[in-house]
Length: 637
Image 1 (cartoon, rainbow, N blue to C red):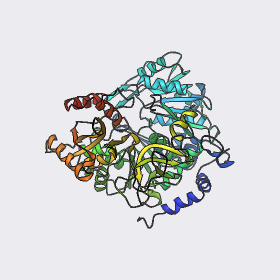
Image 2 (image 1 turned 45 degrees about the vertical axis):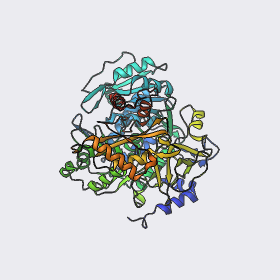
Image 3 (image 1 turned 30 degrees about the vertical axis):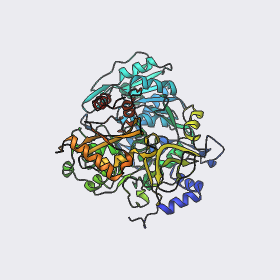
Image 4 (image 1 turned 120 degrees about the vertical axis):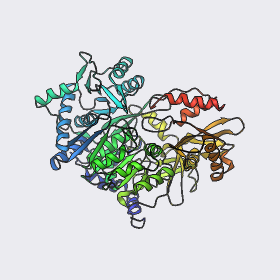
């Protein structure tokens, strides 16, 4: 569909003219126990609240209403190459699993408003746990499985959970990671103690249970099932919290992002059809983890609210068993749309640059690839377009927003693609770019990306028991706006360009330069699989850029030759003003488990500043490797 046929501009204008009418119409897609008294209450909360006075249940909308109409359809397909197992769970089966587990939670003393920490691997029971909490009005807080004990303890102390749901272990590639010792240590470290823990025993590593506190998941659920126990859906206020999801804070204390029930359902349901272009009954796959916001929104809640089949995948994009893993899942299950991080595609491209493994699979049903999580460099997007021959849609959002802010709305008819831009703001969001004084900048001028208040349904209303911190972190820097802490610009066509976090803009001799722009140039080199640019301290210029590159498999040129090429390429494309003179080849880049490159930590190492290993890191050894490489180049500190 060409831009002339896209309904985007018409729909966006309709939202802008009547935001309350727009969201009231979208809310008709949800089954309410009691409709809202007010679509938007401007006087409540930090910036107003959506669907004030409404009563609902998120689990009912995601599970029960579909169990009645499409009970035999698969709700969740579990695909685990690491355990060589697959399982399909129908909507009817999902309802029974969730209602039984919810009854177990009630037996454990969990009531409406209580918090439940979920510390689990990518298995169906993780989704059951989230939905069971939603069913009884408990507030879940999922912590990424395998997170360090100290990090888990800080989250336990902040959320003060009545119960914790966990598993004996997780499986990362070829490694088995025992979770129970980490959980036990976290509970020892935390001041707040749960009343009970329910532990799912996996055959790869059974856990020992502590008498009086720990319950065996399988035995307890089997007992409840035998007794015919099933919990009904508990009515909650639309504005009651559905979950708290912790995101790293600059102070080291994690920020508990709160998500409400009603607004979140409305926004997610709207996004599935209008943004992702996915219809009820179709197979949707978000290749993420339930521990991240993408897992909450697009593995569990949105696909089920839409009546889709969601894929829950326990594996990696490469190495389980090879770089064709994603193609196999798409072919096996008839996936129409995949949503993953650009990092996953860079990993596939590195291992299989010509996409030879793709030829083994039939992707006839596959319609679109969506990328988000960090900046999608044009080279990776073009590569994906070339091999897949379907739309490749970069989009941008945050843990805080809960659903996409900027993207190319496939469901409304896609707009022309500009490689490097996630396209346009979606209805609900007025995105602007401001200078340091809070004034709007002209088109194509770099500045701070902000969203005009109020935020739309689905976005965070506050931080968990930290209203003042919420205002300070997000609302006080630019009054009247939500501060995204991302930097970029908006071009003459209204396309948004997100060039990195605000602190990824480096100041080279008074010139504000985007590290994202330099990364784009480095990634365009045919030998480069992935890259990261950071600003390092320089006595003369304040900061100078330093580029780290990982090379593709089978590259003929030496690293030294490629580094020389890259320095010339940045000089040619950006100009001498970039002062780009340091390119360093490394075997791998330090990343979080969700695939974000740890640029901030790399910068601290290079500048000789104190640093700690981030809790979210995938492999801590890589930071030592980076330090060694920098020392060898005379750069670390």
